[in-house]
Length: 154
Length: 154
Image 1 (tube, rainbow over the protein chains, first blue to last red):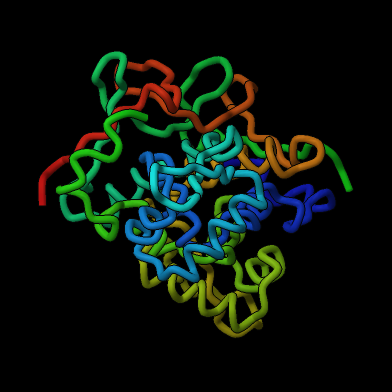
Image 2: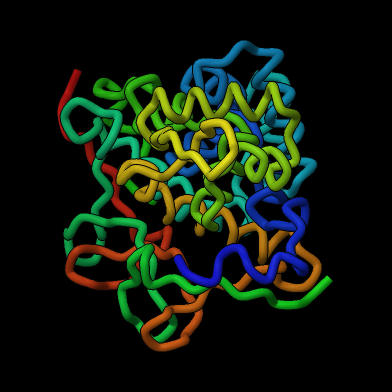
């Protein structure tokens, strides 16, 4: 990456959108709940079990994700049962998918023994799916070809 | 995403590579230190200041990132000064860049007031850079076109 440290005049770490994203999804459990939502989970029990989190922790993270607008909570009722709630991804939640896929492929490559347990394929053509950096002209971009610029000066 | 919940027999949340990635980079400060490393920071003071973290927290996170192999710690000495250490990204650390960019663009879109403070351009052609999902055949992949498959059954 070039253009990195200078000009630092316009730079404030707190304004960074990575920091803002992490303010919203700041815990491991929040990421794992969102992963499960992308995999199709909607019920409280599914989230707790699959994220491997306690009920109070799951409840707290779901509440935060609803408050932050990544999930919506909808009542539903099965015959003879009391009303329960389902959690569904909003557009804001859906758009976190590239970040989740990027984390998954990094974990597959660097932390898993055997390429990881899960594979993502393109339903259209069957080829493996990856998160990658591309410019709007369609070129694949390597880390060394990134240029950092400031949208505005403080 | 399709093929999500079934078969669940082969599925163990703990084996997920997202969980493994988050075991390594599990805190907001760890992400922000890695962000600064990608922006070119190498010195302890730079990391502490720009990640907005205390010295003990910065020291702990740097130690963990070195232990996990994302950063290497190298001694250097300026004339008349005592030996200090620089932290540089390894290949493993570099490869987290798509995840950081994906988080940044999500934050730019959903949490920033005005598109975010920083812009990433392709040094080759000047066009804006984005993290996106593509299959190996080169198609852009939308969340709805992802098919989840298991690499192996438990």
